[in-house]
Length: 166
Image (cartoon, rainbow, N blue to C red; front, side, top):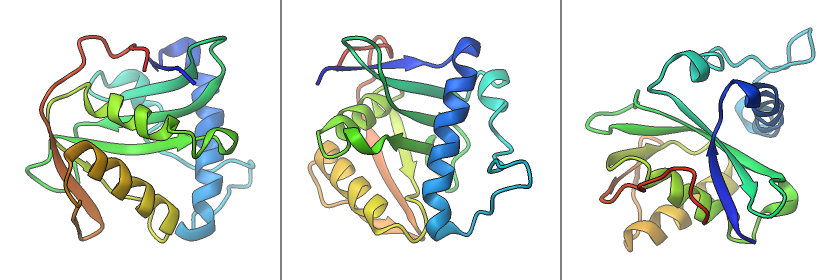
């Protein structure tokens, strides 16, 4: 399936929020995040993705028809120096997993900014750990190493247009 990575803007805010809620629900099985009395999971940085130009949210869509397949949220506030970019959130919806969509979407995100990136897989999720090991290993051609729960790796070449078809 051909996909595209679209930078999320204000018109995409509600869709991104709903996808993020699904992601937070999935992660709550192992990270202990509790749902609020309003039926939502808290995510204090969500609005920052629409007010802080350094934060970027991407919708992952099918090229044909634009069906939402998932999303990625990245920012330049890493957990560990000398990293310059961090994957804050990443989700491929279950019907679209294990088809290479996650791999190609993650690689497209990495190529939006050269430099040292970091990814901290969801704590306690063996599936997330295996996914990121495979993605980073494919990208770097090396066995990725995780230290203190964080993968670090270098990205050499940026995309010329982040809204690329993959």
